[in-house]
Length: 442
Image (cartoon, rainbow, N blue to C red; front, top):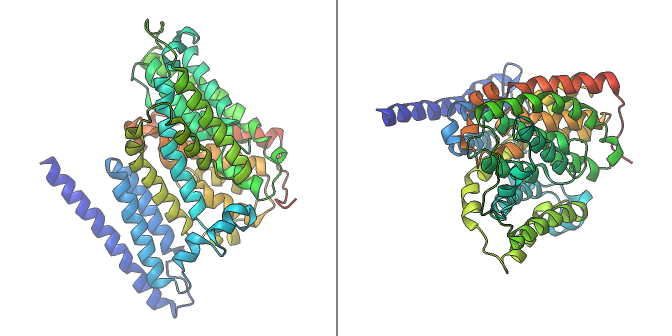
C-alpha cells in the first residue's frame, strides 16, 4: 500500500516537472521572438524550475538525490532548448585551460573547481570524522565537559572556534562526531541544526572559515573587511546556543563518565591533524582545500587503515549538493543584480535566500556587483544557510551522519531558534556597525 502511494506521488512529481517544461513554449511563443527570455509573467522559467526542485526536496526528503538530479536535468533541458547562447562546457570549464585556472586564481572562471572542491571536502571530511571518532578523543571528552546543559554549550563553542580557522564542513563533522558519542546516539534535531549554525557562525568572519569568505578574499577583499561579521555571529550564537543546549540536555543528557577502556589512538589523531593542516595550507596557497584533504588521507593510509566505507556513504549527500549547486549556478542571477541594489536591506534578504539558494553563486553575484559591506554580507550568506539543512555544505555533510535532519519541516521546527538568531545577529551588526560599503578591488 505504501509503495503504491509512493509510486503515485513520484509519478505526479515527474508529471509536474514534465508539464512545467512545456510551459515555456507558450510563453516563448507569445513573447514575440528568441531575444525575449521565456518567462511566466515577470518570473524567468529557470527560477520556477529551481523553486519546484527545492519544494520537492522538502516534500520528498527521503529521495533528495533523485529530486535534485531530476531538477537539474529539467533546468539543463530548458537551457539547451530555449537559451540561444547557452554553452554548458564553457560554463563548467571556463575560458582558459584547467591548468591555467588552477595555477592562476584570477583566471579561474569555470564551475568545475568549486564543484570538485566541494565534492572532495564532503567525502574527505567524512573520512576525517571517522578517523577522529576512532582516535578515542570523543570517548574521553566527557571528563572535560560539564554534565548538564553547559556540556552541549561548550561543544558548540568548540565548533565555533574550530570553524574560525578550519573549513566549516570540518568543524561541523567533528562536532557531530563528538555529539554522537557523548549523547549516546540520541541528538536532538535542534542541536544538529545548532552544530551547523555554530560552524557557519564561526566561519563568517574568517577568510579561511567558509567557501564564500575565501571567494571574497581571492577576489581582493581584505581579511579585515569581513572580520566584523563576528559582531553578528556572536550575538546570534549567544541566542541559539543556549536554547539548543537546553533542548539537547532535556532530550539526552551528556555522558557523565568516559568509557572505562577509552584509549587514544595517536596514529589516528595524527592523521586528523595532518588533514586539518593540509586543508588550511592548500586553501591559502591554491584556494583548493580538498587537495590538502586528500593528500593527507593518502599519506595516512600508509600507517592506518582508511575507512573507505564512510566515503561511500557520503557519496549520495555529496552528489545531492553538487546537483543543487550546479542548478543554482545556471540561474540568471544577473536579474537580481539589475533589480536589487547593494544595501543593508538586500543583504538581509540574501541571508534568507541563501537558506534555499546556494550561497556560492550569490556571493559571485555580489562580488561582481561590488559596493557591499563584505562583513555584513559574509554573515548573511554564511549564517543564513543554517536555517535549512541544504542551505549550507556543512548542513549537507552532517545529515550524512544524521539522516533525520533531511526533513525541512523537522529542521525548522526543531531549529526555529536559528531563524530568530539570524535576525538578532543582523540587527546587532546593523545597529553597532552599520553599513560601510567597500569595493572588492584592492
